[in-house]
Length: 128
Image (cartoon, rainbow, N blue to C red; front, side):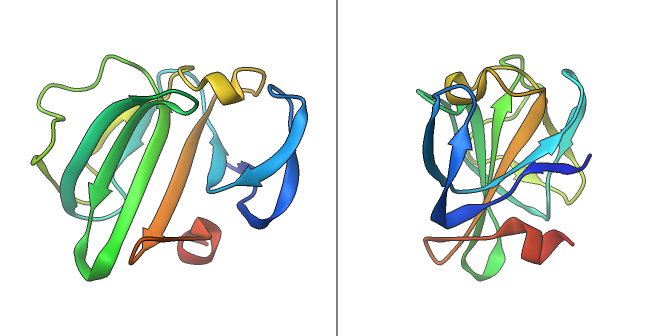
């Protein structure tokens, strides 16, 4: 899908759901509810949790201090998506859902973040 909301680490963008301006630590990629979400690169599932604002979230730790975060997922994750699970690049780790309370007013999408050595980076610089 296309990027429908850019990463805004150092500026404020308007949130349709929250009706305010805030930073946005990742990008929102348009998709249909139920579309498969694929792992960016090989890595290990670090956590699976329900974030109060971002909904069902899977975090994957990769080599070189890189971490990817996949949020707004459907709660019915594929079997075996649990902490410690080794994933290959392109492996399905979930499906697009509507679980992010902070983004309910937005069209269906994947919220995707990248961190390098613990600091957020703009995923668009790495993906495109």
